[in-house]
Amino acid sequence: LSLSAESDRLCVVLVAPRNPLNIGAAARAMSNFGFSHLRVVNPYELAFREARSAVGAEPLLTQAEEFKTIAEAVADCTLVVGTTAVGLRQLQHPVRRLEQAARFLRKRLAGNRIALLFGSEKHGLSNEDLSHCHWLLRIPTREEHRSMNLGQAVAVCLYELARDPQALLEPEKHLPATAGDLERLTQLLLDALRSSGYVKGAPSSSHKRRSAAPTEEKIRRLVRRLRLSMADADLTLGILRQIFWKLASTKAPPAEE
Amino acid sequence: LSLSAESDRLCVVLVAPRNPLNIGAAARAMSNFGFSHLRVVNPYELAFREARSAVGAEPLLTQAEEFKTIAEAVADCTLVVGTTAVGLRQLQHPVRRLEQAARFLRKRLAGNRIALLFGSEKHGLSNEDLSHCHWLLRIPTREEHRSMNLGQAVAVCLYELARDPQALLEPEKHLPATAGDLERLTQLLLDALRSSGYVKGAPSSSHKRRSAAPTEEKIRRLVRRLRLSMADADLTLGILRQIFWKLASTKAPPAEE
Image (cartoon, rainbow over all chains, first blue to last red):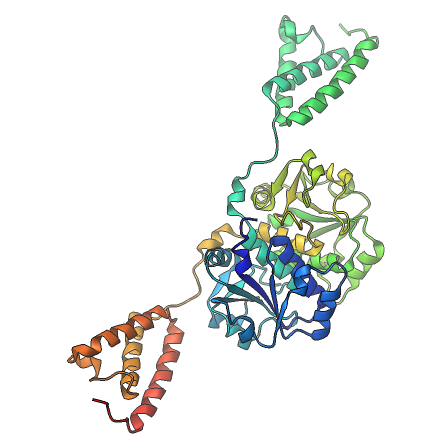
């Protein structure tokens, strides 16, 4: 991830979480995307203890800080952003869609400690919780089913923060075969097709019989359309050589003509 | 969501899922982001049954189709994409980062049925599973902790597909206060500060005492920096009127000068 220093300035704040699996899932997503500061406000004690002691629990859970109030949990942050499944009450705050919010947050993380608040599974953030926020963020879910699972909401938000817009330009990891490889492959395939009786006529390399040309071109185009990698061209050449060797060592059936 | 017709062409395929909570979470994320075709290959029967019958289970779970093999599950799709936490074996396939993959998939969904495969919680997709895929997609997680929870991986992938790049331009839902409101607020605040003895001198509206100007300007700039919404300007005006009324009805302390 390119974030590192920036991601170290984000605090994920879970407010009154109830389900140890969700606390664990939030911590796992944080680890996946490179965020390490988890703060928990007024959690159901049993849930928090269970999440910490679960098999395979994220190490960052043991360093999670616990607070009695949101005010204390965000005291050192210069920006406090609440997450919400937009409803009527949100009209009291400016609301940004996650796509836009993340772009904004990435810039602010360059020099500021930011708190990102997630409400409890049942009720989300209350109006009082939200009054601690500078603005709200909503994940663009369907109107008919807005409310997300807590662990999934955390994962989606952190993914969007860690997501790299430049990655659109990242080249595919695909070393394409050279035109030389493709032509060798084409010729070998034509040889095999001739040996098997699929194509009639003399070897194309002699270019003596005009009638073979359309088939040869068709095969050549087919081979190009496969967009073979260098490795796959090698593999295919090997296969065809083996088939051709077998065909050549067998008596070819008499040509029809 | 703008997808609708496109999202109807995507099949989420869970291969050998083991945990009913993860199956339920995958279904929930599908509902959140507007996808409805869930296919399940060779699931642990008990897990699948439990997920379907869970309290609050997504309706789309009851329409989920069950298959014995991947080949059958993807037979009607023209593009099959596997998800993976990149390891060595992926070198056998072209791999796209999710950001890039989603842009590609969105275009292809315009006219093609596409299968997006997720492996089991424990082992992900096997090499044999992957051999059914045209290419692979990886969520850009941290090198040191690549493997995501299944439900979270589904949520992140579907979010990226449903995400709207144009949303970056969406205006903030913030009706700003007019300059007139802000000036009324500034004057009322100055009146209150004068009544309280914070500012000395005559009402600024008379513009007679030069010495009051710097303070007046400072307050005017402060009020503008607050970037108040229309509603908040109204609220603040009300508060200040009340305070001013109280101050005016009390005997002001004698000025020092």
